View (cartoon, rainbow, N blue to C red):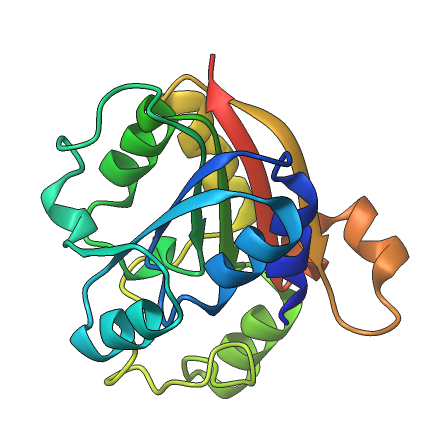
Length: 196
């Protein structure tokens, strides 16, 4: 399992009601149910993923997050999760605002486009980076909003969102560096937030 998903599991209190935005095939929610005794609901757009999640016994609703989440009442979940989906949304700021309205807390993970490898690749080669973390060419990428750690923190400030905790995934041998300069050395950012 990806490190960011492992960290999310650590941050979800036992017995929580969890909404996962962009739940994919439901494997992560199945892990939450098994390890944290969570009551879960997934939101997913792709029919194949919905079928796969349902086959695992995961409750899932087909919905486009970019069209809003007004069908969910305020504070109806303990935790709202969105892992590696922020950058593919047309209106990430609106979805983030909905997340902290719907849940007591929200956990968001995203690839950090301020990572030194992205900067170096663009700076030296003059081309958009393609890597294991970002395996798409510029013309077929689902990523439409390139966010950095600093960008996300500025957006939280603008939306009156409090950062409760955060963690950064970095490459081998950069653990000390990621704590000193997370925007430069973090490849994936993980944030736990709530409404101020």
